[in-house]
Image (cartoon, rainbow, N blue to C red; front, side, top):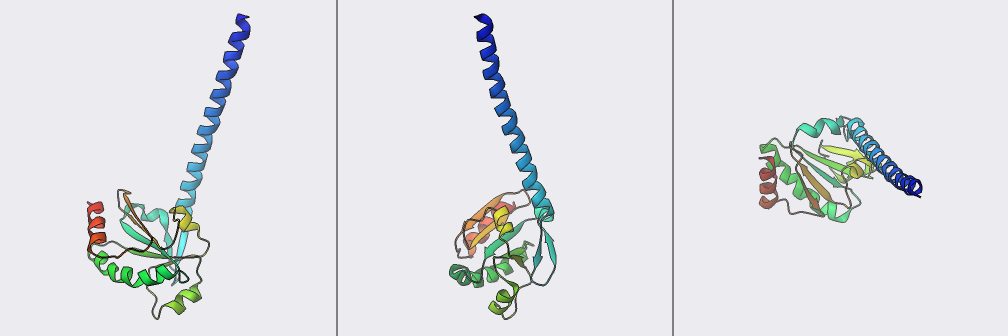
Length: 168
């Protein structure tokens, strides 16, 4: 009887440890896959320049996800393009990520397209950043502090002050 109880407890513990081991392995494996994807993911600008996301990790930047087919994005875009002048004063780059859009449509949309447009034809970079809907903007500081704006923003003094606070 005592042997039976000991064997049953060992079986329960073995099952528990097996679950813990498998869960831990999956977490480590999936974390590594995401990091590796992030490290190796290069996205192209409208003018053909390559930008590696992993290399952005040591700088503060504002990344804006939009599309030519998105009405709120079209309304917000002039505001964020004007806002970029304020960002330049603080050496904070702005990246405009065109999600599921073609180069031709973007060039038709602009008379003179800004050079910081990145092409995310597959939506992969938007997924890496956890974008849920367009437009969405994320400020990432050198310390990896993040501020998210889901939906259109006004891109006035309030947003600028939030960004300045996060950079300090």
